[in-house]
Image 1: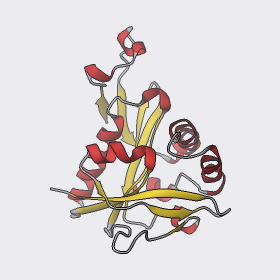
Image 2: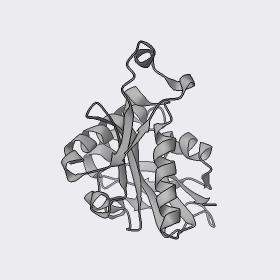
Image 3: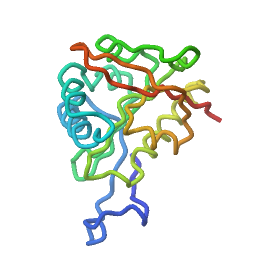
Length: 198
């Protein structure tokens, strides 16, 4: 396990007051499933505005499962943990995302459809109280290291709009937005992004 410390420029007031418990990065376990679902819902509910309307977030949470247990089975899903509290998570997979069965995803304008890649970054979430501490970047780096070790050099993802700045800062590039359609007909714009791993 690897301890993750916030950089000096991203420490919260709580950390500055002496709360220096390390944040540990480890692989997710099935025992984490309920805590992960709560983390996903908390992150989506708090961090999705102003990119999405309340109706879009409600529909997303109601119709689309955020946790794919296959990621845990495959050993490709990470959690960041402080004092037994899960504060961030994310991973990667060769499997098609489970949300593709629940969400109709269009191709956008001609020539700007979703990036094809053998693996995808999946289910990246950070607790609203622990944003801007570099946790997303560190989880991305850990996932990318495993992807390279597995022999892959291209990685893709379907970004929810609030996550785009994180992915751009990590070297991912997107084209045009695509229109996802949730099961109740609610539109949900996504940005397909990709990266060539060096």
